[in-house]
Every structure is written in structure tokens, then in C-alpha cells.
Amino acid sequence: MPSSYTRFRAVRIDSFTHGYLRDAARNGVVAIGSEYKLDDINGSGKDAFLDCITRELHRGVSGLGVNIAQFGPIGAPRPPQSLPDALVSVVATGFSTP
Image (cartoon, rainbow, N blue to C red; front, side, top):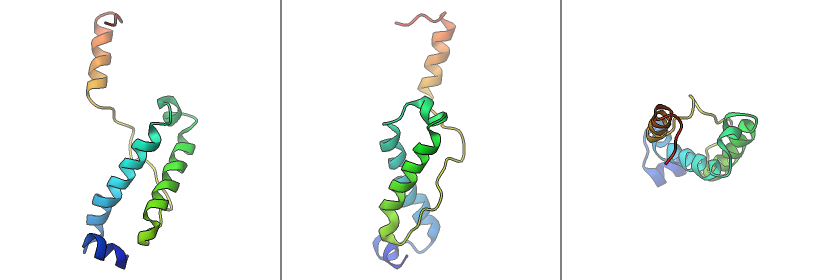
């Protein structure tokens, strides 16, 4: 981690994990997630999806002396609030779409 100090000036590990590492993980999920269907991410393809993200994240941070041994979500995926709102609206109008 010495190189991470000179690069990020992070004295505390949480400033690295909640900053750079969190951004790298989020960017990986977005980039790789766009190649999967929602049913695959929540179903049979979940392990392959997480393995792919873990490999990419490890590849991206291994040069900093960081080893990603395990990666996974803490909770269920949260869609933007506009999606549930739109679904409720469609159901309330009797499934008619514009």
C-alpha cells in the first residue's frame, strides 16, 4: 500500500476504500452489468456476473498492492425510484401503456 499513499494521500484505509475502491467497484458493476439481463444478475447468472466483476476489479487495483479475494453485494439491487414509481402508475391505470 505504500504506492497508494503517494498516489491518493490516504492516511486512513477507509478514505481509500470508501473513495477510490468504491468508485472502481461501482464503475465495474455499471460497465459489466450492462452486458447482462436483469434476470441473469438476480438469477442463474449471478455467480458469473460477480466473478467477472471480481476479476476486473482485482485487475484494476492489483497494481496498487490490493488483492480482491471476494466481492459481492451487501443487499438487494436498488433501482432508481423512478422505476418503481412507473410500475405503480402502470398497475394503477390497469396496465395500459402510453
